Length: 111
Length: 136
Image (tube, rainbow over all chains, first blue to last red; front, side):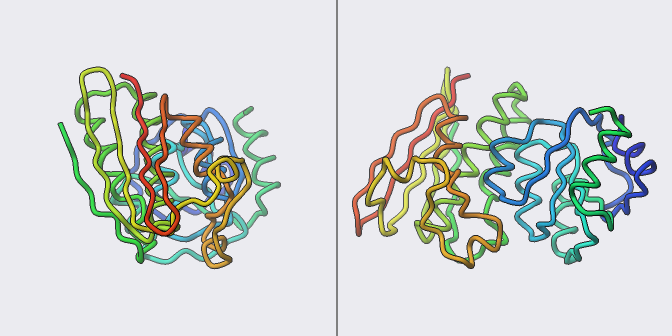
């Protein structure tokens, strides 16, 4: 499943620019401790987190996550989104808690 | 080919920029994606350690014929017990650092996991040098 299809199915709010690289999603990782995510998430994972500081951009980019989904409608500063746009990191948001989001990703994408 | 980076010890918002820049360099050179990812993860962890624990420092990243060698140097407090620091989950990071999502005690274990070789030279009160290499 592509990022755009997941976003539409789960009604995710796209926070970064719309002309993103619509990558294929092959897995999902939920976590808020950055080094844990860095070491355990796999390339092309959807990364679900409540963490919203600027360091999520570097982690998503370097771990090669397909996109970041911020759960529970956590606010994100513009500076974080600007940096994400510069580094081609896609950030989406949902009002759902991380666990429910993970379930929805599983149902929608079969992963 | 060498790249040199100054690592700022105060500004967390730019922590990871050396790793991001070097990742871009490797991608432009056509380095295989899995190697780029290994370098990016190991280098980021070492960079964050330099920011958090070393109070900043410097980094030299070299692309050699058969491997990539990255050296981080700081003049921070040094590591008192390396075997303890290597344990997953052990961290001396303070609460402020933990609130940012760091301090999970996974930095050095992640470097060891993703780098093909890693060495640490440290002296309490003088600083730490971490050298990691990834085979091409």
